[in-house]
Length: 253
Image 1 (cartoon, rainbow, N blue to C red):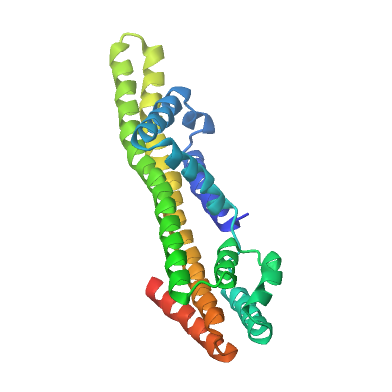
Image 2 (cartoon, rainbow, N blue to C red; image 1 turned 135 degrees about the vertical axis):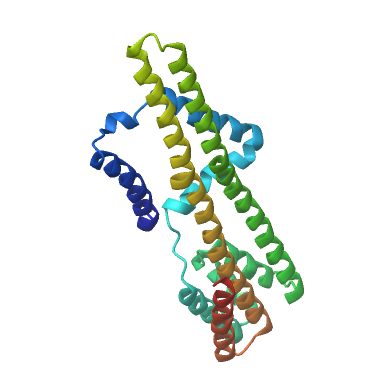
């Protein structure tokens, strides 16, 4: 569980609720079924119209990337690569076959399989880089789903506010219905703007940040795989991989 992401979500929602209580309101003021139906139902409809079912499935699955943090350790990856390199230099590249079941990362495992199958370094690099590009494209589309939802929600919240005001104007002769209409109007706006800025857009940004971290790790693996295939000196490869990480992190900053 990614506690930072969960903590951010809790703090954001709690700040609105506590602020409302400090102003003398109640939590009941923020619960309006009609406003929720208008905003969240309208936003869902707009997203369904904008994206394919495949994109929506990817977006839903990408939530695991947000709230269930995958451990990424550059140092552990470098150590694993160097252990495999030493084994390959001592016993030959085919000795890697017996180590595949101990390699947990599927991307690294595929690269090692290419080495065992006798592919050249250029072909291995091309195949793995294509896989990275495909993964990036898929996850960016997932991010775009939430980004679009963050754009639709405030606008649909305004629609909810207008509908609430229309309800008020139609019932100006009945004071008992005026309060309900005004509440729906303003709560719909809160739902729209709040969900966009506390949920949809932050999730979109979080996905992009996670992708960048994973791509750096995958690119590190490519460099390591090519080093294994070339039979590179372990000390030189470690220095090269550590330098690669420093440079990529500088670029990201």
